[in-house]
Length: 183
Image 1 (cartoon, rainbow, N blue to C red):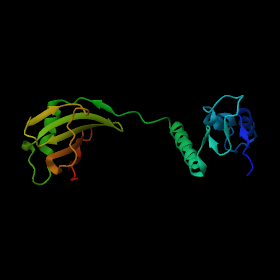
Image 2: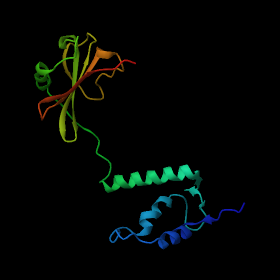
Image 3: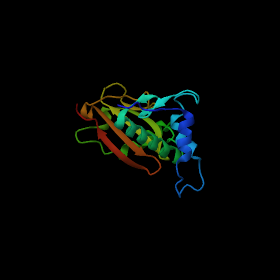
Image 4: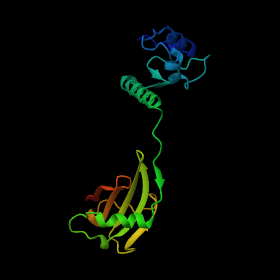
């Protein structure tokens, strides 16, 4: 078996510069900018940093190289789309707003609104103000409580022991009401 040649950054840069330009890339980054940054983390220019079949000095095999290439494409698509989506934004609803939506709620069969402690918080998704209600049949605080998403009760499974309500404040309509599933 013949040994695989070692590549340096200089040799890699020469290979990148030798790549032909695609006709659709008349204005844009240089070949080094397009292809060179993926290997920039692996070492310095003057010492051999990796061999053929390795990415940043780590041998991955064919599947690993394919996954690395896909990851690079996804990351590039994110950058071209303007970066990652911003984190969700929150707002604080009033007790009056939350209580004002309740007369129009169609509760799941076999449940009554008065049997639940009702925790509400506000969230903005895709530019829409949503009122999120988490109803818990715990017998503690019957009535409306304003909270934050982090402090809202979280119960996995349990069926209608916990009901989640999503109300679009701007459209003045219920988006969904659902009971938890069963584990």
